[in-house]
Length: 61
Image 1 (cartoon, one colour):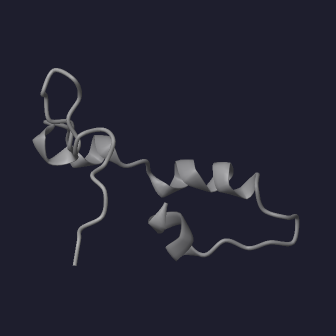
Image 2: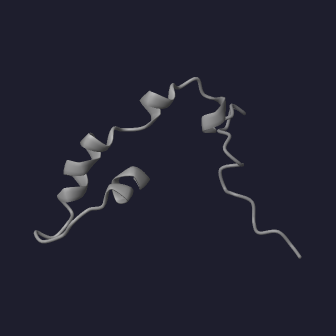
């Protein structure tokens, strides 16, 4: 079978050939992810007044 088309950005590299994938960056894991306490108010703004948000939903985002 034929493979799908290649990604338009060249597979995670920008024009100067620098790899921009997360595995090549020196970012600490704690700086890469927002705490769920910061995500809750953002997500609650989009829910209806009677809506509930699960802990799993916050962790997924």
